[in-house]
Amino acid sequence: MISLWATSSHAGAPPPEQALDGHLVWGQCRLEAKVDTQGPYPTVPSSVWPVACLKARVGSQVAFRDDIGTENLSMNYAEFYHGFHLTEMLSIHGRYVHNRLFRLNQDVEDHVRDQKYTDELFLQLGHVDMTKYTLALGDVKTPFGIDYRPLMKILDHLVKNNDYWRGPRWGAILGYNTLVSSQFEIGYLTDRIDAQTVDKDNEGQRFDEAVSFRMMFDMGALEGVRFVVSGYGGNNGQRRVGAGFFLITENGDDASFEWIRVRHTPDGAKGFNQVFRVGYASPIRAGTKSVAEYESEAFAYRMGTVGFDFILPDYGVLRMSASYNRGWYASQPSYMIIASAIQLAL
Image (tube, rainbow, N blue to C red; front, side, top):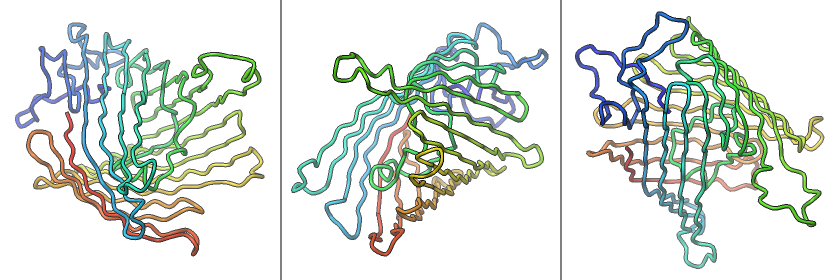
């Protein structure tokens, strides 16, 4: 998505990542245009459109546990994103993922697993930076929480639980942006569309449906701080509440805090799950970027991670990290994880 839609013209500004006179952009997807702020909404000249934003990433990651060799994991992956902005009021967005995971022990029967899926594919009316209202329709991400992930993806498959941020894949999300200091999103989500046929065996099947909302507030007195509050309710009885903040310092450091609590029934009779996460990523200094994260999932684990990304020529990145995972209970294992990756990103 084109979100950094205005660039300064002063000397020393980074060179644009664009071609075809600005109609094709990549990387950070900056829109080279003079923004008109005289009217009620920011606008750019109509000659700017259409614009295609493309992002791609391929890589290979590996993670080793120091206690159980059968849990060592390797992953090759490819991701592709497109945002076709026909006008500032109409755009089509999609993200596609292919993961291939390998258990690094040939004695394990399911040592190879392929994952090919569409992460999102939706039509959007309005622009998140230029119009107060937006409407997204299609295969959308649940408008809930922050879900800031500075670490390698392989840790999501090896340790983490991503269900805190997931919901039924199809839906409609209505957004309102004051274009000053706050944003609001509410979405209706369902998996009914995934049912291709209905027969006698599933006529009584109950489809998952949910309503989710997210409120974001930028603090003028604290430059670069965004507070996020979220809620989620599904027809299966699940209820979620989340809160946190995201910070970007003047030096370019990113930091986040997030807490989410899930009740499996409205009255909480079937218990709850909870996750707490603090993440950090530094700007690139001398070709190196540092990352860190602490995550605690109730009744499961506590994990702290530190890592470094080394910037290579021609869009390459070498990543390395070390994690310590401690079980919530004494009966659960505690272990170290060493992970590394090589990645190319456009």
